[in-house]
Image (tube, rainbow, N blue to C red; front, side, top):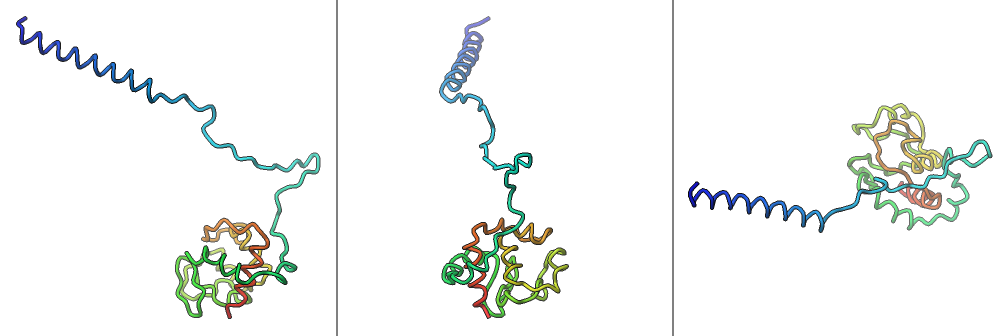
Length: 171
């Protein structure tokens, strides 16, 4: 072998050693220990039917008493979340969801030309009463199984009462 071949071989050898050393140092600096658990645990209260423990509520809490003192301004403030998908003005256009002007006391699937889910179309003859809105706002997917609405629901009865009280003013 001549000197030129030895230099090339030495260059590859040094490059390999540097790459191995770089990998070793990187492993020491950035090594992460494996997690004991791969998810954040979520505490869920489970019903203990053997001991008579309480199960998750089958429906929303009644809000009739809360409606008497419900804050209309709070309902309007809460509606800002709904405004991402709905309009509230008279004759307003549909967005992702239908216009909600005069929804309280109005029929389900009320807006002509809107692409309601089959589940909502099946309720077309029914009226949006305070009770029906309370249930729908609490959990839309449970109130109308098959609805296209992706909102998870409003769990606090005071908030649902305020929202319904505000919706009643839209006439």
